[in-house]
Length: 292
Image (cartoon, rainbow, N blue to C red; front, side, top):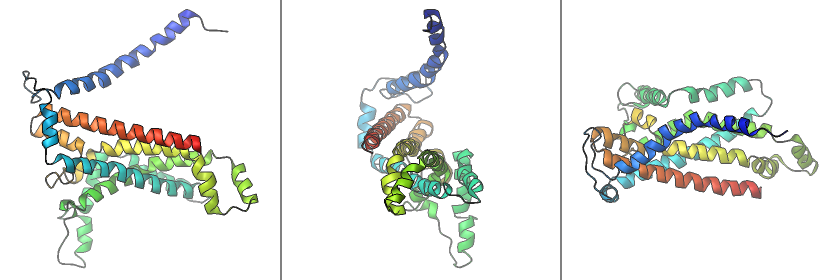
């Protein structure tokens, strides 16, 4: 029995509140941000002037933008790589019949429910120069503490590590669900053919995990490329611009320098970069799913 026209119309009306919320909180801010990027608005004064593409030209000439883009890519790609690698290893381990499986899942996933800002401060108290737990241990064997968070070569790796530590539980859960959905018949057939565990992994497990890999990589890329809270908690983007991402640079430009127009241009660059990278990754791994 086909639904009546009235019932279909009533069902469509139920989409209206969600659509209005989407327009109000997604589309309107997005297009407003594009508009602001063509102005010299300071973020507070009701009056402003149109400056055309000046903010985008300024961004191209900014000597710090290259460092910030590089950091953003490190946070995004680095976190994605390690979250997927470690998350998959945990999933393979917890897919076995071990006594502490439930407890281990809980422990690995627990950091996900903690606020990223709080997680950043927890690790800040571990790495901080004065009174940090790591330096307290180092001082037992040395006379000088180390200021890792002020080292431009190290603090980026620390931020990537903290972000990986917090969210690898999501990757683990998704991979675990993918592993448990693989029929055991495939493994039994591979065993009859004399396949080793390594061959089973690369020829059975990995191809059938392709949808889980796609989901994890796209989610991890989006999360890593827009990383903000952990950076603010650990280094505040310093020293200078050494550990800033596009999101922290946008925040400091808007609220610190009161330059909303330039901040909006940076935000649009971040949106474009995340969209291009995540969509490209989605298309690439979707094709791999079909081939698998």
